[in-house]
Length: 332
Image 1 (cartoon, rainbow, N blue to C red):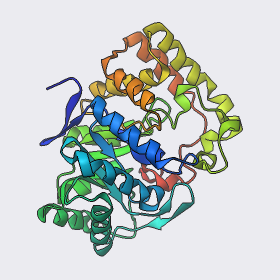
Image 2: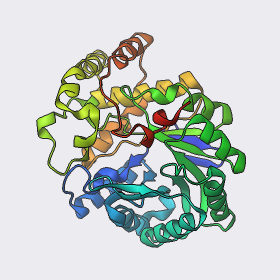
Image 3: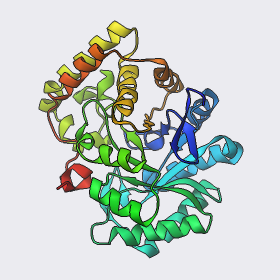
Image 4: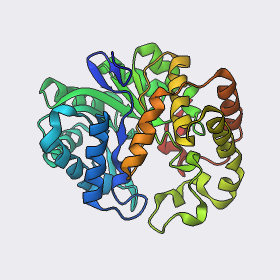
């Protein structure tokens, strides 16, 4: 297999690095749809074929944007999208739904916006704790049997939720936040995924941009949802500067950029835990796509990993304003 391709799950081979589409809509401030489409095409030109979106990004406009790419390049793309959250990252979330009827209606709406007849990887975006996970995954499995979905995924689930879902229908991948400064999934979720043969798709692998050293608290626009994330408060960002300094020191030693170091670290974690790991960094700039993809050529030494591991222990601030919103808050 090419070093730029990876088998995320049996039968599902994707680019070894994906593209997270959320940043192409109004989550970190205003976005130009035409520029966003050019960035998507640049990613696929480069070899990034695993494209990730969701029905809530831009209130559906992100899926429509990806649909424009698919209209001319569907056979070059492994498509992932998600359902389950009502609201939007920019305006705020109203709730989570996972009942069977909603799963079907959400899938039909996504297929229409995307302009395709099948979703390669369909995620439950968040866990609706008022509905048995067996009902949600059972409805997702019905979509597979009908040929509307190829593989199933879960986002921000606990290890127990993953195991329960996997007993209903094979789960191809878990998508959760995982990076040098967000390592809580390593306690239970990642080992369980490895045991079950489930791949892992880290979102925000660059710490929502913080690990690149280019994000300052006073540079966040009024519409930037990071204002609601505790570790992006002024005091937390000041304390977390030590993490960025560690990443920068490794970057200097390896001749890489901080973003490449952060992504290479995740590749190393995949080897440590014994499971396929496909991060999905997002950006609005084609040159950043190229920079990120080049991280696949970088191998960090044990000394580099020791520096980064030590820095990760110093992180200040939660990664979500609502602990129950992510797996960490529901772990036993």
